[in-house]
Amino acid sequence: KMLSGRLSKSFRRCLLQRVFSSGRPPCGEDDPSERMRDIVENFSKQPFHDQDGLARIRMFVSNAVSAFQDPTKAECVSACGDLSGTRALREIRERMRADEEGRTILDERPRFRGEAINFNYLGALPDNTFGKHYWNFMARYDFVPEERPLVKYIADMELAYILQRYK
Image 1 (cartoon, rainbow, N blue to C red):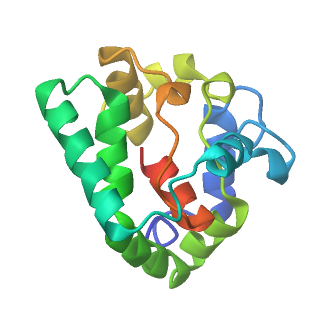
Image 2: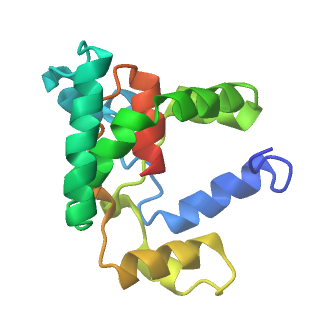
Image 3: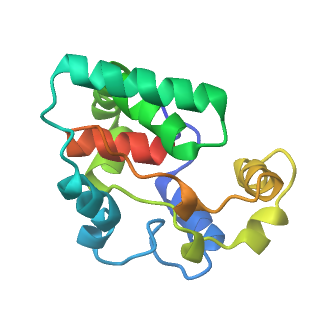
C-alpha cells in the first residue's frame, strides 16, 4: 500500500497542512477544476494525439537523439517519457485504482505548486524525511515545481495527470 498503512488520514492531513504554508490543498488552489488547468490547456493545443504509431516512433527517435546529445534539453527528455511510457502509465493507473489512497489521488488530482509549498519548513525537517530529501533535491538542482515540462503526447487525461505528477 502507498502510505495508508503507515499513517492515519488525519495525521497525513495535518502534516500536509504544515508543509504547505497557506494551509490550502497541495495543488495550491481551492477549486478542484483549477488543479489541472495548465495540463488541460496544454492538452487541448496538441495535434499529436491522433498520430499513428510510425509518426510517434519518429518523434521518439528524434527527441531521444536530441536528449542524448544534450541531456539538459528538458523538453526532449520529457517527450521521450511521454512517447514511450504509456504502457507503464496504464499499469500504474491500475495499481492506483486498486488502492484506496491511489483512487483518492486519481479522484482529487492534487498538484504540488511552488507557491503553496513552505520550503523553509521542508528545509528544517530532519535528514531522514521525505520533505527534507525533496528540499535537498530542489535546492541542489535549483528546480521549482513549475519548471517541469507539461505532458504533450499522452491522449488520456488521467494518464497525462499521472505522468505530470511523476515528473
